[in-house]
Length: 176
Ligand SMILES: Cc1cc2nc3c(=O)[nH]c(=O)nc-3n(C[C@H](O)[C@H](O)[C@H](O)COP(=O)(O)O)c2cc1C
Image (cartoon, rainbow, N blue to C red):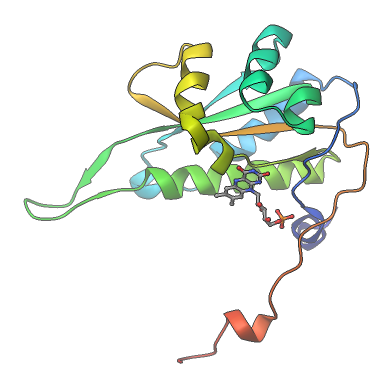
């Protein structure tokens, strides 16, 4: 699939997945796309847990019960590390949010390019502090934070991207 076709075809998929398993080779290719995303100061603060184990997936879907979490053969869990980029005595930055978002978008595009579908469940991971419970389920080390879960698989239904505001409403040339 051409790159721009992938960008246009990617859409949030919240419905049921087929029972079809996904090969480790495909999973690795997808997660690797996430690892290849840029990161602030190349700190590479994003890491992943690939959840294939049914018992663990069931625990996550009990916590966040949706069609996608209940049926996805794989749930990717994105983690962040808080690492300070100290420029000098007065300036310092954290890039973990941007790093993680860039990695997740690469993953969603890879998932689409390979004919799968997914949902980025960040808001729902924060609800009721679910991310803390997921960290417990997966034994996540205390220096990492669960940012989102990404259930993915072969979609049963059609994948449709949400509509967008018109180009002119969001973009100006040169200046406002
Ligand atoms: C930061 C972020 C958080 C999101 N959290 C959730 C979520 O918790 N649950 C969900 O179903 N979708 C979630 N989404 C998916 C968005 O709702 C979706 O991307 C948006 O509606 C646009 O639709 P599209 O992905 O089909 O283009 C999230 C997306 C982003 C970027």
